[in-house]
Length: 487
Image (cartoon, rainbow, N blue to C red; front, side, top):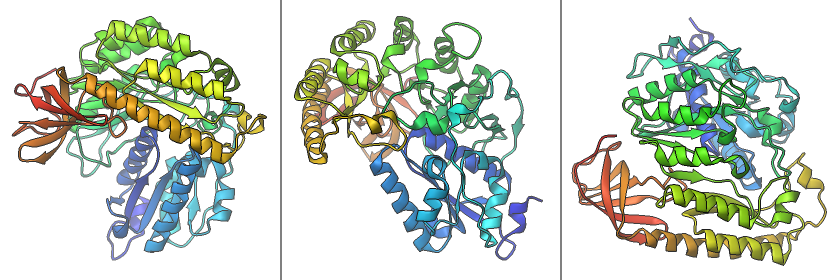
């Protein structure tokens, strides 16, 4: 019997809630944590109020995400359950976070995940484990993907509709582990790599996620088949930098091979690739996304800015001209493709001319969705020491200005789709004659959705061809044209 199952209230399994903040990569980490805890005998519960212990998978991407993480930990502590902080903020700040937040009963780093079940049992028994000591994971030698055990085995998980789950990787420093989905629905993220070798001056992620390590294709395919068994129909491929996939594995153009293989997995209707680095996006990848049936014509390009001087201070490559050329290549290969990006405004040294260059790029590019972030110092990054910092009020003013422009441009881009046909994957029923789904150019949660009219009887996970008849901002309104299609 596992240690977790021996510590209970009235001989009932300990109840644990896993709350996830931040990006889709954190969602995968949380499902891996849940897999471990489920095998150890914990009962996974959806509501914090029902839990004996609440595991909060924190985010440390920007200042707002850190505040959300702290607020979530404090709110969880108010419920009365034991509270354990894991994830990026816990990994990055460790003992510092524990000292500032005594309400958390434990602050654990990534390396604690393999023994998390036993640690939670200790926490419930009143013990307070030592807080994580942060390290720069770039200084660690990553585990080679070819040196890890192949994910050919499986481990039974109680409560699953499928018989088993495949093995998969944690962050590069960790061992293979399990996965358990925490949310029902036809879409799920699938991690293809961990870490990042780039050194953008504004980003701290490589310091606590480590060097880039690809997952072997066979591991990813095993997990995709398992996801299909869980009635997942769209998989979203995530990593810190997906265009680097395969650089540490033998062979060429492995990302293209991976996309083709995943699109052929029975039960998977759509494969969506995210987190593309413009400087690493080659013509063959553009063509692969456009040409492989079952792969969404969707290009998630991390432009960040368009002024060459600002990009150089960010330690990135490109310019307005080169980025527009890349977009031209994408639209030549896939005229209806969805293109989205994020931009940072108010970066140290950003001038009015730099901002105008960014606005000119956005106006010409006419992307489908753009996230706008105001620069703020991140601990330990090179940008923290850069001269030319802008006042917070000016940064906020520029964020508002660019956001307003982006909202206008993306709404116009959506209107351009009126009269065109889109293939919509149904997410959930809304009313008796109206359901909600997403077209190829709409990633979950961030890129809008499509309301399907005349979709009586459509079920989550089905694909249906629709004609766009209206818009609401970046959201589409479309009329169902036919019965569900099969890819």
